Length: 89
Image (cartoon, rainbow, N blue to C red):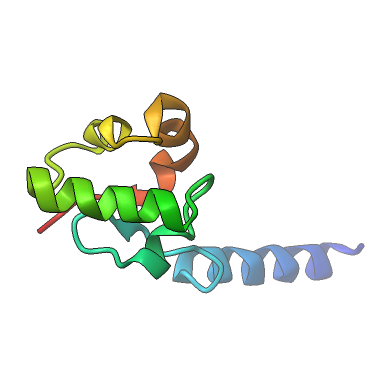
């Protein structure tokens, strides 16, 4: 590829990545629905329900690390999803 083509391709790619067109919105553990939670890696309907049940019983998540305390989640699932999750009220 020539310089102008490479430059403009890189510029367009940078725009799309920075604008969120390709970036996924983080999933808020304190407000997410079951259909949002199943978008997480290794989380199906059963684990999504466990997350909602945990949230109902214990209140809002206070830290991202607390996610690993949900039955069936654990440290491995937390690590896989760390960049995809957020917590807020």
